[in-house]
Image 1 (cartoon, rainbow, N blue to C red):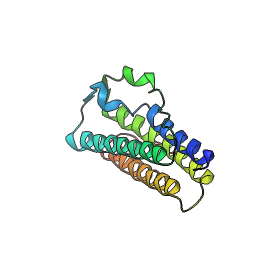
Image 2: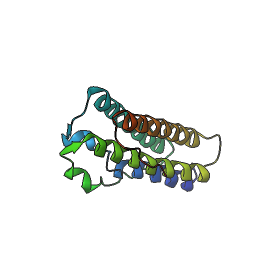
Image 3: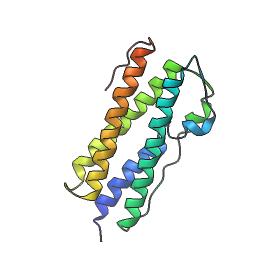
Length: 149
């Protein structure tokens, strides 16, 4: 049986991912004004990868004897309809920064060299890569740089 703290920590990461305003962005049918295919494709890839990681976290929780506690999606996502590219990229970037902070906090609580810590490390690395990619896209689109926390 797995320590309850590990299950709780994994659930914290999963809940944060599910509650992220960008978690359901692809489902909203958002139209991006003045966006090129490169930017749209990059955002879609990021969102797809985040969805896969949420699934992997849920599967690991079940394997370890826990129950995934999916969070209620952020209601603000329903307000996303016609968006400026800079606004969309900025929102996804900020969401990723918050998720990275949750993962880094979780890693401090998880025992090292466990499947849970390895998966959360992998998710954190993906968030770091996404943050770098998003910042590069913001810079390429001529939008002002967004401060990262």
